[in-house]
Length: 293
Image (cartoon, rainbow, N blue to C red; front, side, top):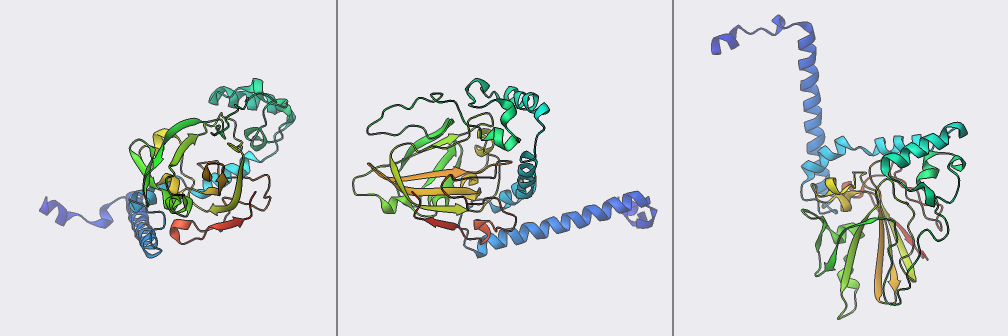
């Protein structure tokens, strides 16, 4: 083997193989540098998202970049000719098991895929229960996890097997703001692509503050968030904080792969997944929105 190695000459390799070897070396070197600088950046800013494995997050960023979701969003906002709308939206509904019978308006009235994705439902499609001392589901989703927050600095399950930091997720520790003797509960609801994607108030409440956290756009499907921790605390999200008759209430909308746009009916200035925003866990700042009601 040593003799064979000594006989090896770089010039003996075909030109194509030499080009591939150089390209591979350069790509590996640049990737290693970017990986190191990303982990260094997270460490320097104090790891505000309490990321347990920055190396894993780096590779997830490489695989699911924010720009790709932005491109997908731009594509979804393109005008769809009327002649193609019925067949296109029907195919989407078939693929993702969406119920078209409950859509309020005809399919050919939605000018873009984005409009259809945020479609309204017919009156009475979601009857609201009368729950005097409880809450109803704010979304048309599936329960992924639920439970109690039992202490300061808690880490909760996204899905069984992976966790995230609550203070990093909300931007503050909710335990510090509850009354003596109160219990703090949480529930995680997943919206599948075919679900109705509007969020409603779960009860009579008063939101006093809102915060937008620039972040990643990693997938939110259960099979993904069960494998990787900290997805909730690094993804782009909007946190609405206020109170209801039982005390503190926090409602969080988390963006996902190809679904990076979050809109508020009462705040037209809110813009998510912007080009020049810096993610919070790399030193970017959240955007506070006080006086939200």
